[in-house]
Amino acid sequence: MVDTESISITRTAKSRLSKTDFDNLSFGQVFTDHMFMADYRDGQWKNLRIVPYGNIQISPATPALHYGQSIFEGMKAYRAEDGGALVFRAADNLKRMNISAERMCMPALPEDIFMDALSTLVDLDREWIPEQEGSSLYIRPFMFSADEFIGIRPSLDFTFMILLSPVGPYYSTPVKVKIETHYTRATEGGTGFAKAGGNYGGAIYPAKLAQDQGFHQLIWTDGKNHEYVEESGTMNLMFVINNTLLTPALSDSILAGITRQSVLDLARHWGMHVEERKISVIELVAALKQGRVQEAFGAGTAATIAHIELVGYENEKFMLPPVESRTFSNRVLNELENIKRGKIQPPFDWIYKI
Ligand SMILES: *Cc1c(COP(=O)(O)O)cnc(C)c1O
Figure 1 (tube, rainbow, N blue to C red):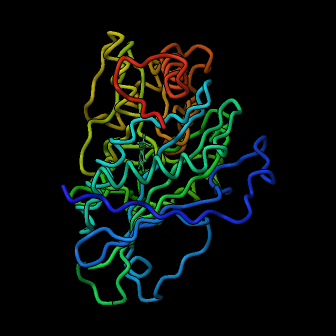
Figure 2 (figure 1 turned 45 degrees about the vertical axis):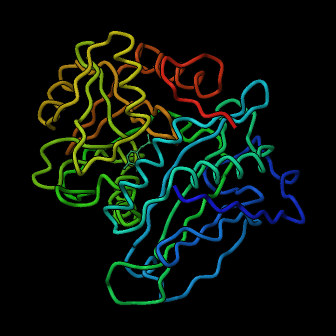
């Protein structure tokens, strides 16, 4: 292994910490005092640095702006009762970022650089980790092409950064979702399995149409025939039917969520019957009509578990059982929250302590 360059640190002259209202945090609008940056030049990650949070200079010709050559990750740090900072399954986020990088023709980031950057930055801004119930420090690593060139070709130069953002609860109420049968998020052979910027840019318009109809989010279906359900917004989709935990099998149009995997791991650990397979719209709508769907939820880092209270399909709307009756999703949500906050020991090696 090449020895990692050490990280240079430039501290902010004036912290914004005392001016931040931690009791009224919405998602992704407040950033901590510092951010991490590294440059990929001549085939190597260089100039590892932590600098005060602020605007950055890029060339207007950067391919990230023109062609969407950018990828990101999302993870969270929690404050433990002893004041330590706990990060959930961080190495899995790096693995996934490197899978996204390969698909987008970008360089991998070595694990030692990633973990060193993460620990140093979170440690420096650890006072920013909220203590409030339901709050945490959202961590946003991202990478973009930084060539000064507006031709389309594999880029040579890249920038990797990490931002930190204290956040409150993502959804305050159970969500209403609509099965989308016209627009497509991702398709076979596409980039749906990668956290690539363009996947999200293209999803905003169809999601807005659904929001105008009173839904919070879409249930995306496959891009070929809109025959199978895939994900809900930027969350993986899960159901409990006949006491079985059911979720769409991973494919190249589904993002392999770390929350999804954690829910499956816990369910199996508890001896629950789990199925990862294709779930057709016909099967789901029939189960909804017959009242056989016991629980439905989205799983993702931002919300952890987002209970689904209503599913719209064509001109019909199906209400789901009250959230209080949902044994599995409430149990798994509590368990995950307690694990992430260090209140209980997970049955797996999931916690990285800083
Ligand atoms: C990030 C993301 C998820 C959830 O992944 P987690 O690792 O659980 O946060 C699910 N679907 C999409 C499309 C995503 O971008």
